[in-house]
Length: 285
Ligand SMILES: *[C@@H]1O[C@H](CO)[C@@H](O)[C@H](O)[C@H]1NC(C)=O
Ligand SMILES: *[C@@H]1O[C@H](CO)[C@@H](O)[C@H](O)[C@H]1NC(C)=O
Image 1 (cartoon, protein in one colour):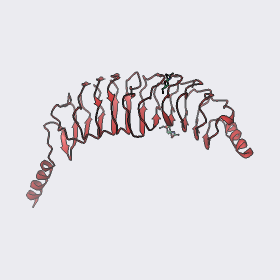
Image 2 (tube, rainbow, N blue to C red):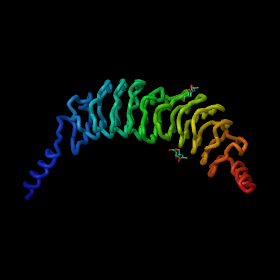
Image 3 (spheres, rainbow, N blue to C red):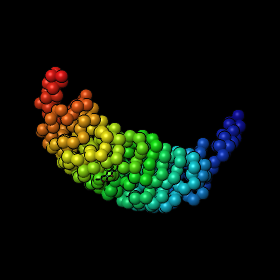
Image 4 (cartoon, helix red, strand yellow):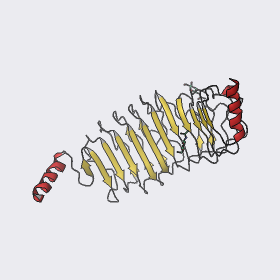
């Protein structure tokens, strides 16, 4: 009986039609792990729907590494302490890809600006705990879906320049930019986006949101500036904010005139006097 079971299991695992010399494969999900994996194997089955590289020692993800994976839906590259570079055209023209996770790769310093291109189904892009110095260039992604861009714990990202998220999606976007080293956000940073949510919490050295920072964007609808050094909200582009959170934002001593926050429904602020200003204003309505 036991023997039969082993035999049946073996049949099942080979029977799923996928087998690979170094990576584990089942139901078209490939898991390549541990230090024996030092490059992306060139013979991964092209019908894979998920590729996971965990605890590998791959130094560079070369151009075209994932080309031809027409069914691929998810890619994860995580816990790689030798990864340094992601070249151009790595996440490129993958018609079914909806999730990319790159995390715990603290030697990763460089992602080529052409790395992400033409990903019509993309919904989630995570880059967390890396050493990259710039936000990834997302303008060629052109997703047709709502996208959550989750860029957290990258302490070398200091600046958010104008038009940084233009072209990420034709739909609305959510930006989680918490706990990076962001010190400066330029005017028109969110130009060309429908910004549902902007979370900037725990960028401790961020002191200013310039007046035209939201110029050219619709939104944000939700804004979180908790545990930043921000001392004033911008004077333009607050009219869509429904939820404002500024916990332990000790420099924010003054709020803009409340007529600018016409959509506000919920506010969590640092100083109790602020919340009363809101309450009074509501009572007057
Ligand atoms: C903002 O985006 C528009 C196109 O949507 C563009 O014409 C304009 O130059 C952009 N502004 C800046 C400051 O780059
Ligand atoms: C912003 O991110 C922090 C950290 O992940 C989270 O605790 C907080 O709830 C988020 N803010 C909002 C308004 O969702």
